[in-house]
Picture 1 (cartoon, rainbow, N blue to C red):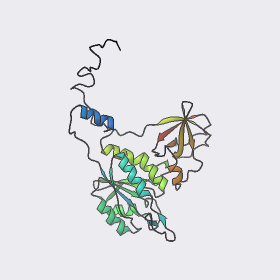
Picture 2: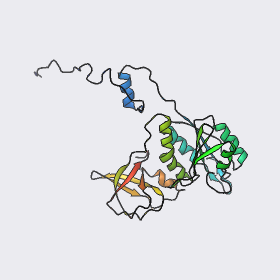
Picture 3: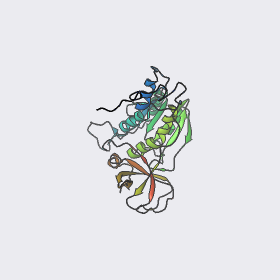
Picture 4: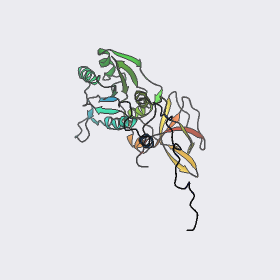
Length: 281
């Protein structure tokens, strides 16, 4: 009360936020704040990349849809649902195909139907066992294999190739391997397809909560949890890292990265990690 109101109070100068010369680069991700900025710039429509369509195909006689009573030697086909959610989060438009048996003709038929999609992602059947038929079926359709495996744990039996004009990525069948390979590898393919900068996820560093023994010959993406303590990020790797343990992945919010032949790591050391989504946080 009684204070003098200046002429400039509650007044915003024209052009103080953005100018007519301001441009957003083609690789801009349309986040909520960017969409607000575009609207404030008085644009009703803007050109965008179309979401790439992705066919998600799981193969295996042992697979059963969730909710059904399992027969002897059957397992629940869990991969499709996590992968579909991941792909949608990356900016793609996934479609889950019906489960395919270990029969080369059935696999050929399904792969041929999927070639109308922008990307084909298969799960299982990409290794070198008797019933690993993705490669053989793909070659009947003209598959050009670009790589056969990758020095990564989990996820060594990862194959990439192309059938005609359609890229194909064959993920391992183990649930954790499939999901981590999708997070680390497939995400980069989707990013390129939607015009985003083709870079790996940003690495962060955290203080190791307890020691780790030396690593083997493959880069290891260890399921881990991070927490803030006294202004620092602390990371703890799960004890068990078997590639079938989905519970560990569900409880994780990070992947601790171990380079090939990494030495013993001690409590208190800084180690790299990438963030993964955990909706329980």
